[in-house]
Length: 153
Ligand SMILES: [Zn+2]
Image (cartoon, rainbow, N blue to C red):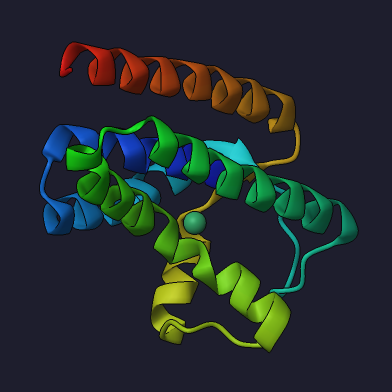
């Protein structure tokens, strides 16, 4: 699942739940729920990413960082902690990918990584759909946060 989608889910969860620790836990649960739905991916044997997957992952990761900055800039100060906690919880489970790429190992126990890999429903034909969905959700979430910020004065 694109990390941008996890960022957006975490932002919405944090805004709705309002409590940082609850938002972080719910964000982490949302990660696994989303990963278990069909999404773009190129299943490959072993943990190594192929070049296409790596390019998409880098673009997605950088977009996700930009999205976190946009959400943070749009969220009223008093809602910022739970929104960022929701985002952190929703993105944390995928920390194994950059950790394996840069440091050669996951920070999580092997049983968790194995389970995380097993629940994936990756399909190579869903990239365009996933990008369109993430872009649409981005517009909706940022518009919702802006409207909420205006409404709460
Ligand atoms: Zn994941």
